[in-house]
Image 1 (cartoon, one colour):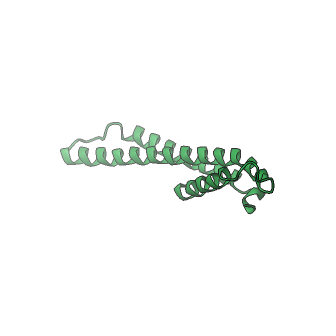
Image 2 (cartoon, helix red, strand yellow):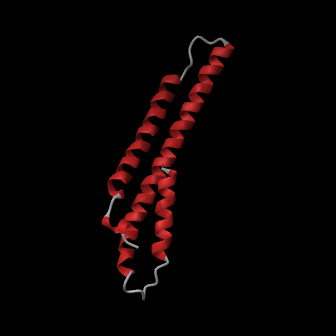
Image 3 (cartoon, helix red, strand yellow):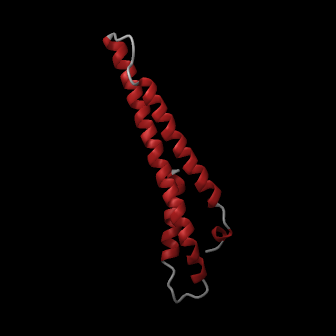
Length: 110
C-alpha cells in the first residue's frame, strides 16, 4: 500500500505542476480528485493495518508475559485478537476500495 501511495503522490505532484495555461494537458488535472480519494483510502488502509499490527504485537507480548509469570489465562487476549483482526480487515477493505478505483484511462496519459 505504501508503494501505491507513493505512486499516487508522485502523479498528483506531476498533475499539480501542469500550468493552467497549458491547454493541451490541462484536462489531465480533472484526475486530481480521484487521486486524492485513492490517497485517502491508502492512508486509511495503512493506518488501520498498523493498528492491527500493534494489537497483534501487544497480544503476543501479553501471552508471553502471562506464560512467563505463570498465569493460567491471558486476560483480554481474545478481545485483542478480535480488535487486531478487525483493523486488518478494515485495512484490506480500504485497499480493495483503492484497487477498484485505481485503474482509469487517465493513467495512460501525461
